[in-house]
Image 1 (cartoon, one colour):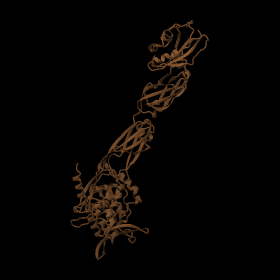
Image 2 (image 1 turned 90 degrees about the horizontal axis):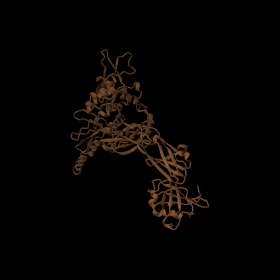
Image 3 (image 1 turned 45 degrees about the horizontal axis):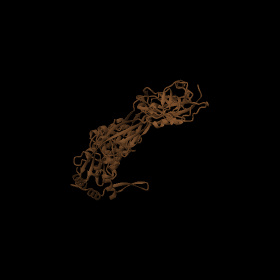
Image 4 (image 1 turned 180 degrees about the vertical axis):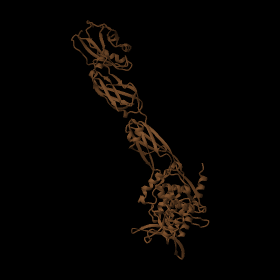
Length: 626
């Protein structure tokens, strides 16, 4: 080989020669035997081809190259474009017509950047994604970046030993260590089609990119809303529990709660649910797949609503679940022929309303003020609270959960449960309410209030003394000039062995103010209330026939029982004088509303609509029709 100087020409324009950039080594004979390699020319147009000539060294015209090769006219870009890789001669013509033909040797180097993604090439089924391959760059590979769907994931590990690649493509810097690898956690990528993009960056800053479509298959997300379902109690201050479970192959990142399509908040997740994991094994954190959220429904309007959740996995996959709820409330208006102010005025004139207050640590029963009376009579003060039960129609039997559930509740609230007369009386309350067609929760709540949760003496029962014929022995007692006949009650002076029978009175029925025990026990004996269950049934019969279903009054709400007023005849027929009486029982019912079988009941509320109010409402509806 003769001595040559070296001129490097890099052709990298798109569409020129090939899609790849091709490096040509241009050799020219030089008598001094020195190599000249400091020049680089980029060809993008016809004008650029002439740059080659300006860079060519002066050659000895008498010397010939020792390699035969095709000729290329550098003045003609079409010649350059048609040049094939291999050994070529560059012929200078236009500017050198009067000179000897200079022969140049052009030799392709083939050291353009190369990149290949070897894996993944098959469907990825619920496992980590292994991105592997190799990258070559004439200057050496500095780093390899990996993207999924154009989102940067991480840099791959480079410099992995690949002598096979170096054997096929020799001459690259660090070619024997051209391998790269990145393991992408399966929990960071969702199911479906994705694009893996690998970007190899050389030490000289040059880049080469390859893309590969991949398919990822993972167990489908699962979710279920267990509560609520069907009929619920909207407007409740204690909120509505939303609970269930959710599974995602990558684990659950968060659960968003929506009501009627509007985002509310995120639910608490990670609640222990081994039953779900048993039913659907193989999911990350399946044992702790439960979720819970308490939704504020105190201001939610009546009607049908959609509760939905959006489950977001650690791989950002999304699944949804929804349920429809119906408010168990039915609003029924009671149109009255008098104004609210008129009833308040008449109630104040009656001058019988009382309230309890605390003075020096003592409870006193005092006259209620005008503002007290007005407040407790106004429905608007209670419509969005637990006190709404004052307006629930109680003249119908409502389905309850099983008696074991009721008895468990009784056990949780009654003091001295083993000796309490209300112990295990769940069935007694249910059957008494069914028999006399009244609400069972109301019956329990009213009994709690009247007996102090079964702790009053009348509720615990008294023993009535019997004669030899097993009949009660009576005695006369004069009260305010009137003679009453009361049964004799066993006391500490009663001889041992005296025949007695125990009776129970849960509503204090017949307990006159001047002789509450005598009157209450006598009433219980006369009605045969000789067991707690019979006492409960007797109370249900008395309140049903005397107030709730009494034809003349039909006081079928607590509000009616407390504030009943007949404008036509001035008849009051009010059950109690305590202004807080209806509200107190309402609060107790609120605590027990979970005992209703809400899927089988309707909760109808009777709301008083006073004269001025319904006239205004009527006029408003006329002028606002669409």
